[in-house]
Image 1 (cartoon, one colour):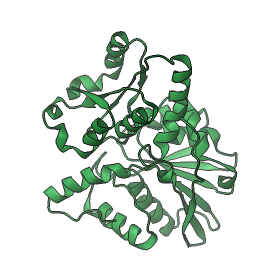
Image 2: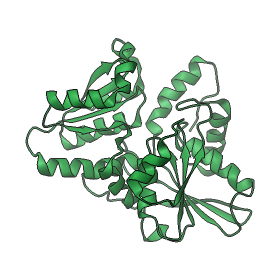
Image 3: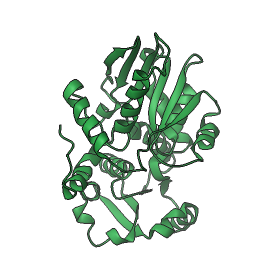
Length: 301
């Protein structure tokens, strides 16, 4: 993987109650390896290829609508590396072609192995089995979070991000929050907006970052992957106002919660906030398929 040739824009959203909110458009970094996924994979793949230049293979884990699965498949195609996706839910094995994320991953060359949800929960056993079967493979954890991923997230920060008091990100597996925490300046605080119900995340982030300069905010809105009408309405209104698309699982929920925190006076006057747009827009097609089946408002860009 190469460093991206484009400069990632930072867009001002608004100033309210003397608090300025900006959004860093990491979603623009690559058309298919989007947002934080690009940086999570960057050192993983480059270190692996340096050590294993012959007959490489990438294996990873994810659900049917996983941004990580989509990104790894696209990376495999870009680098000419075979990819194997371990997909949660063996009920999908006969109809995966109906899923927009898996269909695109397949088109990018990924081979699937569907496992039961019970087996999927035991990642350690699955990983050991796969490493025995494919001893030279790079096995990347679900969501891409590991030490190499944390190291890659530092590139979301730059000379231009030093002026901000808060750095904000959605939190799934914790890798992005850990990277921001690890590489933030001494005067900066990190806010992680939890989109999963996982009480172990704080310890996981601390173990990876070794700094207690972050705070986690609940923002799951009913659970991971749950999309309620309030979030859909907010995403559509946000796009109409700022022409910036948000996904309904990660950045959309973060921005909804963050903007309401600003409006309610959570931040001191004069605070400058930088939120990270971590991509995930590929999941909108699947979200709209679900919303359409329920005769609900769609996400419209």
